[in-house]
Image (tube, rainbow over all chains, first blue to last red; front, side, top):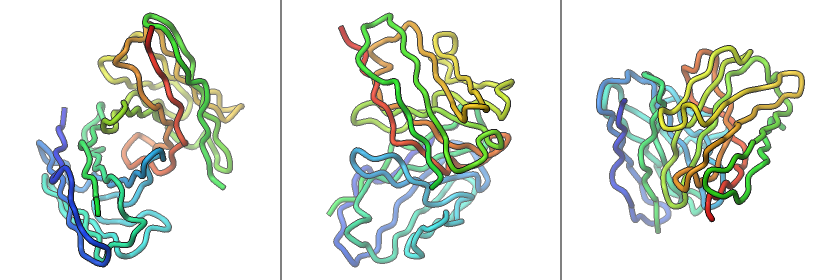
Length: 107
Length: 120
């Protein structure tokens, strides 16, 4: 099973600032990685797939990078609606699909 | 609007059973694999099960293999999760999610979730 590890667990930032979230895979997954955003009481929303491709309707301030075992989600200028939990997921070696434990973006 | 809507959650006693449903709309349901993902209170997302377009291929999290069965009815645009022998550890919000063919890809559409609580 591939273990996904996200850091930090909580990231405190201010609106307008840049946020950088990390995700590490326990073995190489190429670019078979997705990022999801989840707000309290809501379903996850796909942001990024293929490590760097924005899903439909996702603002350009969200960008993903990385390959192999190290990945990054960057939000270039935080808006109030961006404060949420972000999770990474690998779909390279499954079953099982595995998710990181999430990074909470907080004010 | 492309949509998935789950139902069937509730409170059940340990050892009990529950059947979750997920109805799809505004896309060709039979073209897609489908997945159940759960999230225990305050925890991260956990994959539960996936099945292919015609339901002939199923994949399960090891801990639910046996008690849980994923199935679909393409004529009704519906996905199901039959859960038996439920334990407290199965308490979670259960989401259905649209999955690319052959399972290689991200889950691009999610339902709103249905809460399952296993407690006496």
